[in-house]
Length: 149
Image 1 (cartoon, rainbow, N blue to C red):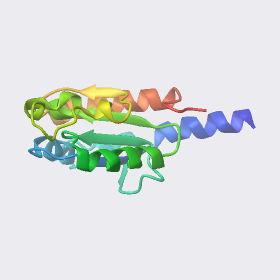
Image 2: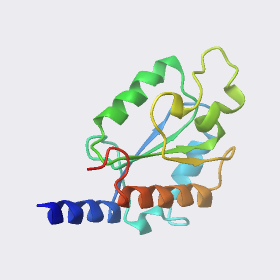
Image 3: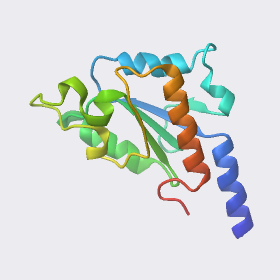
Image 4: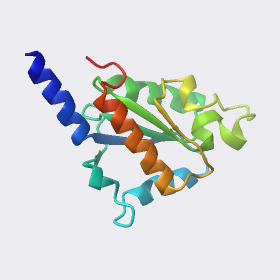
């Protein structure tokens, strides 16, 4: 049974399912994340499948500032993901709130709401940096990820 669990966890890292959630902001990071899905950068070459269902996702890719309205949504998406799971925060807004950090309606970075495994800095970060962050997240997923068994 233990060997079967190791096999399933290893295969999960070989073909992870990615959930993308934009908390909001200028959408610069969102555009760069979507560029990663185009044939030019092709993040799918790593076996990643982009989907919109948190119940099947292994990797949560987030961007934008967290505010009181989307804080609960982000926490709910994270709670619905099965373990092991990895969270990648993209952009300056996702890391700290960015240029909006002093606004009255900004809670801060994504790590104020859910635990983050990989940070990708930049405003907005290049698609190559986002892909590097996703690959680092895949390595953490292969090692068991957060909430691993």
